Image (cartoon, rainbow, N blue to C red; front, side, top):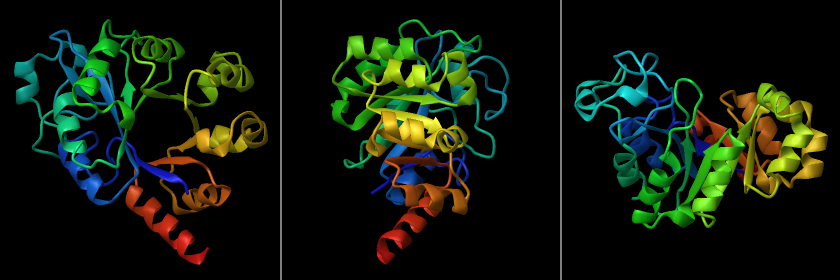
Amino acid sequence: MTSITGHRGARNLWPENSLTGFRNVLALDVDAVEFDVHLTEAGELVVIHDATLDRTVEGTGPVREVTPQMRSALRLKESDEGIPTLGEVLSVLTSAENKQLHIEIKSDAEGKPYPGIVEKVIAEIAGRGLENRCHLTSFDVPILEECRRQASGIARLISVNRDWADRQGGLHAFLTRVRDLVEIVAIHHELMDAEWASITASLPLSRLCVWTLNDAALIEKWLARGIGHLTTDRPDLALQLRAKRLALA
């Protein structure tokens, strides 16, 4: 059965990467929850997708420059909540013991890895005994290689789209490079569709994730293909379509 992952909580239903979104998405009974982590210069691990505040927060500037005092004052757009820390998000999500957590380790506004972020994220996970429930995720091979060096027992997921695959020497070369590094390869649905035969010749369906599907027809298409994992901003819709498909089976 295809596993359903709520992307950034469920950003088409609630403010993305918000505590409200994370609480509510658990009530939908998703299989996994995905979210993003940056590191500030003050040493805080904060859950936000972009490397800058502008799109999702009532503020501007790089996330790395946010102080704890600024974070307390800032508010997410269309919300009365602030930017949550990784610890706050884990406190919400760990209440559902059967949920997988996909934690994307982000880079700064210049595309550079944050020094020490991998170690800090792993320490948060290990401190709560969540090693078996987490996938550390990234687009960047070196970040996931560092994750493996520091915590080989925590599963890993790598994401790729057409542009990124081309910059890595092509999809075949990319898949060959990461096959033994990660448990799951998450591929943008357009690239997955175009290269379906070659991808499935390289990896079993159980190790493939398709992202990000919000249209009913696309969701149904990939459920019918038996993909292992599906990431969506509309987990409510994906769960309904999966349930309908299972009822007809």
